[in-house]
Amino acid sequence: MPLAAIAVAPESPLPLASILDLRLREHLALDALTKGTESGGDLALLRTSAAVARALCAAGYGADELPTVAAVELSLRLDLPAGRRAATVRALLQLHDGQRMAATVRDYVRALDCARRARG
Image (cartoon, rainbow, N blue to C red; front, side):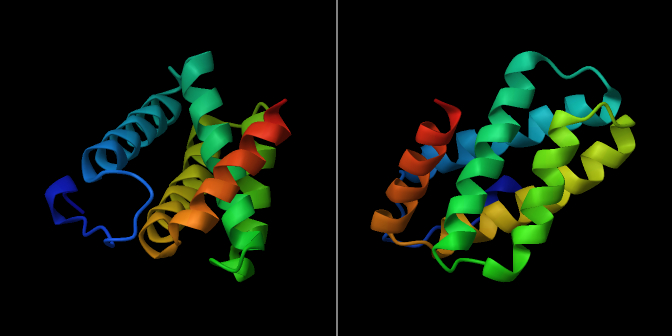
């Protein structure tokens, strides 16, 4: 889906430019992961995205997708082949794009706080 085609709900917690920037950075990290050239920063970004997605699942935004999030979190910790890791991360990013569109400001901010606390 082209970036210009993304619709953002008015109650989004972030300005459209910020959401597009984050989505672009996530997909660049995914591209690096696919090629096996990911950096520590790429992995940190994807781990944070997974933690936010987990918190949003727990808040009811895709609760049935918790196994997908758990698979991504595990794949980012293990030394798996690049293609296998990328496939799980791709599924996470699709889920997280939908979550950002559906979540209320309050729930998204809570998810971000939860992810920050989990990272220490």
